[in-house]
Image 1 (cartoon, helix red, strand yellow):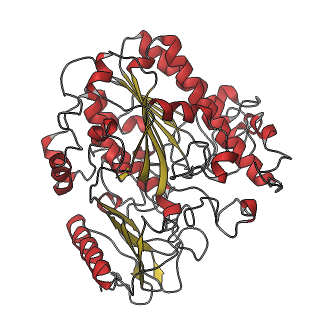
Image 2 (cartoon, rainbow, N blue to C red):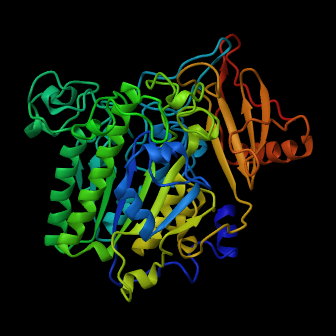
Image 3 (cartoon, helix red, strand yellow):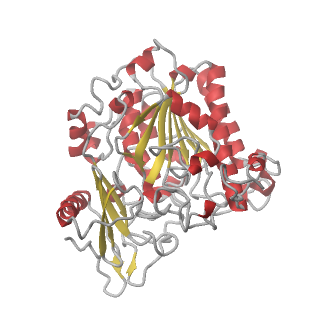
Length: 524
């Protein structure tokens, strides 16, 4: 609540520039969420300058969206998927909602361990469950047709939370407990053992009509989403589409025909061959972008593009250490997200910084909705934002009142007012990250960690080997110059802010395997 009040005071929240909450016509809303997409996995530049990776990937639909809207250059998520997805649904930071790692079965901890530490005892292995206020629930109560399409990954197998319709969605297309598909190709029944079956834990449900066909999973989801959009328009219902692609999560499998552009080619401006795994990965990105293009085109055909807001985002930083093998372009280990350090699962920027674009599907001068929710076309916004901010922001767009009793449980901020203001808002906002688990390989920030960003400064604590690090992201976006020893004053300031927030939100900590006691940070 403290941060929300600060946001309003600075004119960046739901103030006079934000949409009015009224019974007026409501916009359609699409939250287009890509799984594991890195900050640089696109031809849209989110860095200060275009990078070699931007030249490698082809994402024309994202380019169109960015030209019509605003790209957030300092947008964040949790380091892995379920914590982010639960934050979007609840508006809560993972420290508060306690789904701090990815989920699968309610009685199984997916976390790795270090030599000394294991995951907290009480984190919510069952994931998000009915009974909590959710974004689609509020939108549905306000008259929206709420459509889930793709990856859910909120509640574990065998729990009600694995079913999106138990969490506020009217329609569920192919969503369940798993965070990855068994296979992307229809010929392989999307990971189900036989055509027409459902195979736990990874088989994708609900797309039996595509089994045995050559339809890629991304394309099947798009076809189904288009049908749901069309029905909502025919029924004259405003709709909220949560388009949550399984792509570009593993398994890395080619998306035909897009792979033909990359296979056997060289990186632009170099003589370096594109590795096969990178050709496959780029084809999955291209297929995702083609899905976005098809959705934008169908909105045009249905005559609702000018009344539809699109928020494009990823659920965590891009894959790097895991699955992609040889680092591209001969740039050294774990530079798939360069200039950011490391990738998904890491405490560093490559693990948590994501692409984020907000735009109208089509610009229409004089449109009443676009006058109410003003977006500066082709602009860049340096305001730090994070996934839990989507909850209050989308509610503001929809004119939906958040229950007064829920404000004390809400951590996200409404950033509607920043959409019409280009540049750096100069706000010293605090962002909190907490991953008391082990994900992926050792090294480069994959140990249990917590981090806090305040302004340009970022402090990271690693529970093993009990080490603080400090970076100035304005000068050192690659986090190569640890200033902890040289700026103990700044480190102490950020550590104290972290401690205060952990106490307020009820943080859980890694557990010492020998003593069974929780290990808190070694506060400086």
